[in-house]
Amino acid sequence: MATADERGRGIHIGSVQGAFAIGDNNTVTNNEGNGAPTTDPAQEELLRAVRALRDDLARVVETPEVTALSAELADTEGEITDTGAAGPGRLARLRTALTDAGSVVGLLASGAAVGQAVAALAGG
Image (cartoon, rainbow, N blue to C red; front, side):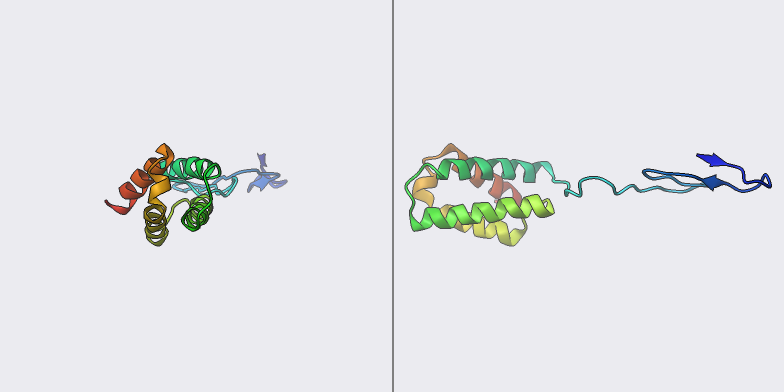
C-alpha cells in the first residue's frame, strides 16, 4: 500500500509481495516460483519416453547392456529434470547405450520412442 508521508510528499510502501515497479518505462521480472527449469517440447517428449523405457526395462532380464542403458536413462532423466535439457554429450551416450542394448530395446515400443526422440534432438 502506498501513501503520502506526513509532509504530503513521497511514497511510503508498507508490504509488497511479488514484483513491482515505480515510475515510467520500467520493466519488472519476477523470478519467484519453484525454480524448475523450463523444458522445450522435444525434451519433454524425450523425458516421457525415457521414463517409459525405464519402467519397461525393470521387467526384462538384466544383462550388462540393460544395466548400462538403465543407468544412462536415469542420468538422462536427471539431467533433463535438473537443467531442462539433455545436452549433446548425454544424447550421444544414450544413443550408444540404446545401440548396445538393441536386442532388448528393439522389442519394446518405449525403446523405439526413446530412439526417435534422441534422433530428433541429436539431428538424425
